[in-house]
Length: 220
Image (cartoon, rainbow, N blue to C red):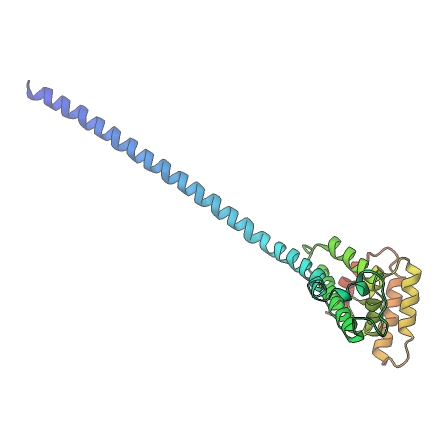
């Protein structure tokens, strides 16, 4: 065999080698592309989770704020009727008056926080908290009494809670009028309560939760 034959063979072998190297490179590139796509997909999912995290945290906060009292009632089941069954505290009950009032304060503070979060963050699950607050206010004399006695402690959320408590607009007006006429109020608080009554009268179609957002905006 002459040199020309071996040159031809070497040329063919070289060509085949180049083809094999090209195929190998292509395979490696394909795998790298697949890995890159998977990494991009993972990054996108992580980004979506990160974007949803604030919403999930607000949902979790709503659940915590409106059900935190349940844990305490599991430990003190004798308190449950005062907040679920329209029971009034009376001397001789298993619960003390201080226990009932302390639970009422805790529940109302949690409800007030939930209302402020619903006013500040559109992602907050409003429909869940208004039903819960309405349920307890309408079934708990202790909550109603604490709200009336300490109405000044809820400057942004008090009107909303009165709206959720009442079944008719006339009841809200009557309660606001009574609260504005409580003896011994200082001038700013009496004026604030009269202002809430005027605001309510001027807003016949405003949903209860909007009063919290409106009062917060006025104080900024």
